[in-house]
Structure formats: structure tokens, C-alpha cells
Length: 213
Image (cartoon, rainbow, N blue to C red; front, side, top):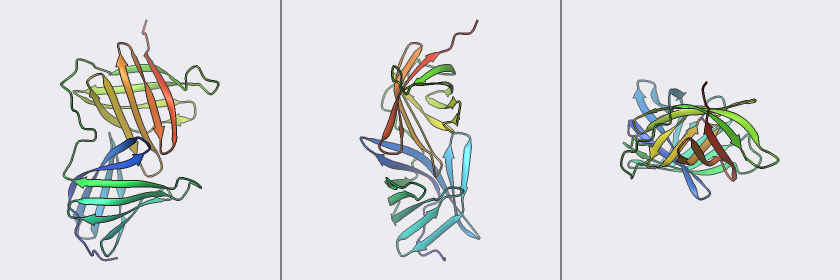
């Protein structure tokens, strides 16, 4: 479908509204001879989205591979709508908002910290619980920015990206099917917090830096 509205090109900051939290991610809008494309950004991962259609002041963004889309209205430099995951039987809709020309994924409001989390960690999901499970976390930090993932026996938590803000760690990922938000406190060699999976699920996470002999 032909363009009926103009999208601001360049970087955007989007949020998905989870219960008591916002899951942020970034995307880039490009305009070329064939129309608009979007790149969803998660650390080193760039996901190309090229199925974009328009109707009035609405934009329909069909996400690749997974059966989901973003339906949103555009006003000036903002988008307001929903992410719809058709593969789920419940909780299909999650509110979506985005602002143009905002590159920060998480907004840091505290001074620089001496914490550096670049390392490998032993992780317990749902510790001290009958459903607890063991995993490995790999974090790489440059300045305040942190990239990483959790490795489990069944796969990984994709390309997480975020920041250290004081003694807190915030990381997120969105790729059209997976929506993860990791919030934690750093205490010496330990990182304790929660991972939220879309809504309304969450799991407590305890990370301990592995010792190398």
C-alpha cells in the first residue's frame, strides 16, 4: 500500500507497557525508493522489517518470521498502538508507544558507577523454588552500556541490551516474538533481580560471578 503519512527517519525509542514496568527497545526507520523499512536493534542483532502498510493515520508493521505485528497511529514524532502476538491464545495485545530521535534505550539518571559486569555468571532462575533451574549469564560492559544473554539447556535469552545505572542493571530484548526485561541490583560479586516475559509472567534471578581457577 502506498504511503499515506510520513515517518520520521532515523532512530526511535519504543516501549511495551508491562504490568508495573516498561520494556524499552530501539528501532531505526529508513526511507528508500521502494518505501520504508525498519531495523529493530538488540545489541549486535539487527532485524529487518519490510512489510509496512498504511491506512489513514495508521501504520501496520508486520514482523518477520513470527506471527505478530505492531498496529499503531502516527502523530508528529510519536507512535501509539499495540503489539499483537497472534501465536498466543491469551494476552495477545500489549500497548506500544514510540518517540522519534531518542537513542537511549534506558534513561540513566545517576552518576557514573565503578561497577563493571563484564564476566561469566552462574545463574539460578526461581532460586529456592521447586521450579528453579540453572543457567549461565554472559555480560560485556563498555562504559554504562551492557550487552549479554542467559544460556540455558533449552536455548538463550536472545540479544539483551541495557545499562548500569548506579547499582542497578537494566536490560531488554524485543524481536517480534520474545520480549524480555531484566531488572537487577548489583552487590559485589552478585546480581539479584527479575526477568519479565511479556505479561504477566516473571521469574526471580540470582547471578553469582563464576570463579576461575
